Image (cartoon, rainbow, N blue to C red; front, side, top):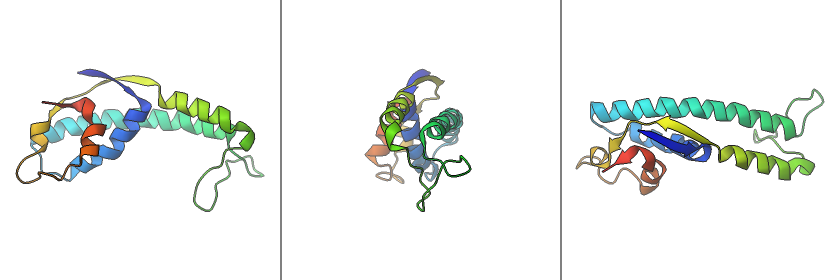
Length: 132
């Protein structure tokens, strides 16, 4: 099924989908989750590359013109560019992608053995691939 997902939804889904990997699910359900994961990871890679370009454009640079990273391994945006950086990053987060998703049933995720192991926040993040 083709669904439209914003980049922010893809980021949230990638963070949540790992919680399903620890469950003992049917082969078909596991297969569909794996296919969906690969599709989302591909889109995430494209997102990360483009986000890197935005960071490169507006981050504070060191003497070698490389993005300066602080002791917490974080980049800092030059104060004069913070508004435009936030605008461009938010625009990127809201870009839509059409993705062919393999649907899974919520009943295939919950059984007597793994009941209550899936947090509602996980299901909310993965709403687009769950039917029932």
